[in-house]
Length: 465
Image 1 (cartoon, helix red, strand yellow):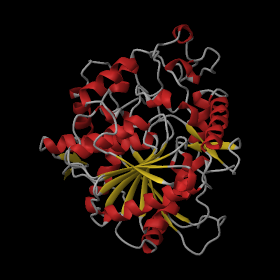
Image 2 (tube, rainbow, N blue to C red):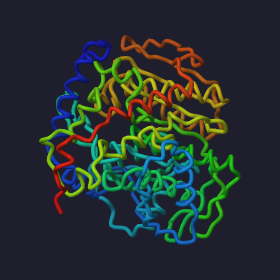
Image 3 (cartoon, rainbow, N blue to C red):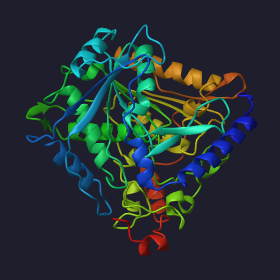
């Protein structure tokens, strides 16, 4: 395939889309999640040390998060109020001088963490919030032909090699938390898990192998829906900080301090799909175009105990009305003032307009923002088309941004569009990336939620017990 030919890239995206949708329709949500819940051995050049933080008792983090959700719930949409649960976390680091297929050492978890720390070059710590549509899987290219796709699971074990490579490139160690999955755990359950995982870095709960990490040494990274959760986390911290509200977590008082930076890949930060790029860029991206095309709403989609939901809805992640909530879709947030520096890397995606909108809004509010957009490249192209010059440059720039943030870097805001031909770069005016105000964007998003309808088949089909 010619990676410099935009027509070739668009054709590859359509092949990926066909296979993606075929796989998405092939099995029930429960079956897909059963695959996601496996815990593969940590083979190859990675150290992995797992631990479980107990359910917090002396804690205000859950109540504070839910109070923010309630406050921004302008339409009064009913939603499930998740409880706190034990957090299943794992540290990942680079393990030198072993082969790609080296077996995982038979050490105790605390011994693995000691080895991991010994091979970490400095204090830089990454909180990696992985993607997977909040629910199950995303397609990933296994070889250079885009029709050969396997699943990248919504689970830490699926991201270990990625995390290990990132740890090597940045000299860091990486923490991941196993997010609760929708539809059985709808918004804001995963956001609560991510919020508490960040607090676990600042104030380690019982049974943690690590010491407290200064926020100046933390960079949050994520891809796709994980990037959405990362920006939701950032909004939670900013809103608590503006209210001068401390957090009690496992009996420890924690201030809502933002990390050193966020470096996010293909950030799916707007969930209604209500911006024009959703239609404009469909020729070079992988998703259905309308709310009526979602595979899990089709009449012949396999049912199971968790989908259709017991209270039928038109979206796996939450009630359609909550898709426009500013903590579910951070694009709807009024203010990014006080944010850490932000770095966004994406293709010419259906989600491009929301990324541009947040970049423009945050920049105008005094935030350092970098936006890199690649012509004709689909969502998460760094997974599918990992051999392309575009993916190699994106991953290199991503690692460099992380290291820069850890050193206190706050570069002047920039927005660039990289052409397929020779990666020629064109500067974009970050002050004028999109034409909407925040108020206009909110209206756009809310109107789009009205397109999401519960199909008749979901009303009459009773979930299996």
